[in-house]
Image (cartoon, rainbow, N blue to C red; front, side):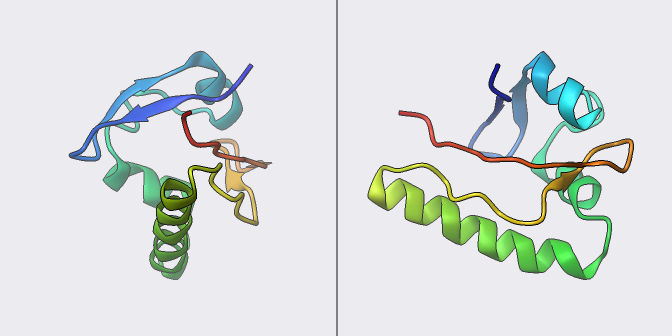
Length: 92
């Protein structure tokens, strides 16, 4: 089963499937928007800025090429402090 979340134009997370919660440990109530996600995904204060820029670049490249978003290393930490390797394909 794929991990799936939906984000609107205002960066509000509008849906999150059960697999996302199982893998990362977070619910939609805990992560209502992207602003709340970055500190959870990257608790080191210096990492979010660097990764946000790289993530935005990968998303823009995927949009332009109509391809999947390239995976980033390392994996995202789960709520239990275990890393979950993640790939984020673009919608067709």
